[in-house]
Image (cartoon, rainbow, N blue to C red):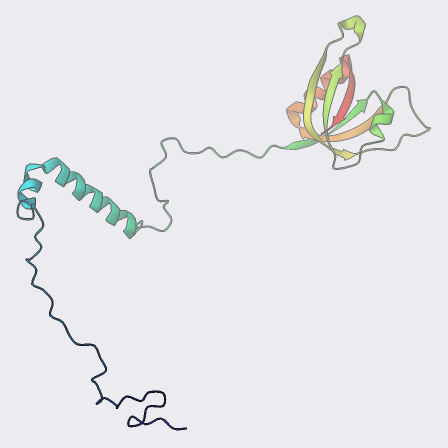
Length: 181
């Protein structure tokens, strides 16, 4: 079935001429012009409020400078730092052999473990306990020759030089123990 303008398929009405099937136009009513209040007086108001005008001008200038970016690529953007950030020197670690009082505890340790070293005085000497080294890395756990020893077991820790000095001093006056971190 073909559709032709002279024979509509579903309508029995006579065909309309082309372009007449649009709705009739209507006239738009006349409106008075829209006026914004105070439009004439904005310049006068801006002159009267000079501080606001200067502040707005500075804000626009600052925004334009930030958008333009720094003149040199090697300089950082933003406010200059009053005190330059101090670079931390790398802490030099030393290997400190330490005799731990309980040999069975040392057998639990493996290289790479982190331990806290605690010194405990004998009860006769006052019985105090204190933390000597925090988060020391176990470097080596030498094997005990001839089974368990009454004197404890040796472990090698990687610690800063000052901590190694405290460990040596504490081992001369107290028994050392470790806890796993």
